Image (tube, rainbow, N blue to C red; front, side, top):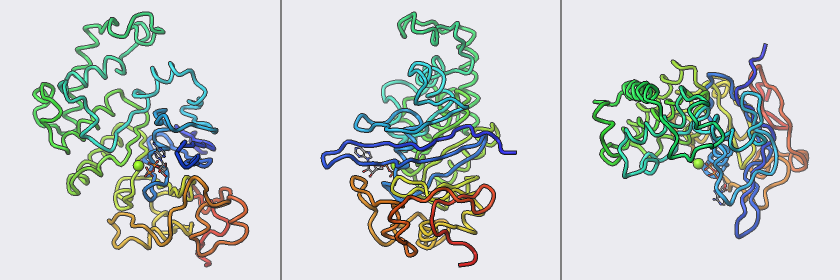
Amino acid sequence: MRIAPLLSVRGLEVEFGTDQGVARVLDRINLDIAPGEVVGLVGESGCGKTTLARAILGILPPAAHTRGGEIFFKGRDLLREPAGAVNDHVRGKAITFIPQDPFTSFNPVFTVGTQMLDLMKWKSPRLRDADGATAGGRWPALLRRYPRARYRADRDAVLDILRAVQMPEPERALTRLPHEFSGGQRQRLMIAMALLPRPDLIIADEPTTALDVTIQAQILKLLAALVRDRGVSVLFTTHDLGTAHEICDRIVVMYAGQEMESAPTDSFFQRPAHPYTRKLLESLPSPDAEIRDIPGEVPSLIDPPSGCRFHPRCDFATAECRATRPGLSPVEPGHTVQCHHPVTAAR
Ligand SMILES: Nc1ncnc2c1ncn2[C@@H]1O[C@H](COP(=O)(O)OP(=O)(O)O)[C@@H](O)[C@H]1O
Ligand SMILES: [Mg+2]
């Protein structure tokens, strides 16, 4: 029996208004994440990974708008839920975010302790409607109470999570300002903040690309261990197939705003079925290297190719590929490909 997904994105379309015209950045994207699953979203730069991550969180930039589709989270469509309910119960609480850049994600003028406890004031797992924050805004935000007992329990939880991310001297860390931490430590703090509300899903958008390579590996292993212990799902965007191989249960490949292939990590690397996936893997100089650009141009998203957006660069393209976008075909259990001519063992 198939487990109901925690997150199910269906036919999501997002456009950006630009000076040159409307860019169709997500073209009817589908994505499922099961409870406790770590999913890697991979693709060349500019293929729409960040846009998809932000669309799920409901934090698209003002130039972007969602034209269609559904984002089901625990069975409810976030695009059709009241904005207040999503803000109180989902964004920053049931779904949290680890951004790419640990250097700009903290407020420079408040201590780490102030910022972590402020997060807990609004998003603590102990928060109840009676505390006022979800009571429909009867009180202005600044006047809402922070009950003492909850404050103490939240502070203990903050210290626990700082220990879990292996932050040295957690009590002292609370009194320090963000700039007093190294990049790697700041990213540990971001992981701590993302875990604090006890989310069901963490969206991590290239969480370590700003860091030193050896520190990247340490931090990703730590993140993977922490989410496995807690049964938290992760959507992890990366252009690094090596790290995706290390930490992901399943890998989804995107190209120019369309999803191309989704497979458990082992079959992804052993039996890639999409011609684009195969090109990506062939372009890797070694298994732990980053995606290099493969021959040809990533198409303009203002006037994208018809049908399968990969067809102008594909060795197997036919008239059918130019005319219609392929549907989902199963390759093996849990492994699907969107291609009219998937590469199978027979080829
Ligand atoms: N603020 C913006 N305004 C206009 N276009 C944007 C904006 N942000 C991203 N885009 C376009 O959306 C596409 C996907 O970008 P992005 O989601 O950042 O890709 P990725 O994270 O995979 O590198 C790119 O073609 C980019 O040019
Ligand atoms: Mg990005």
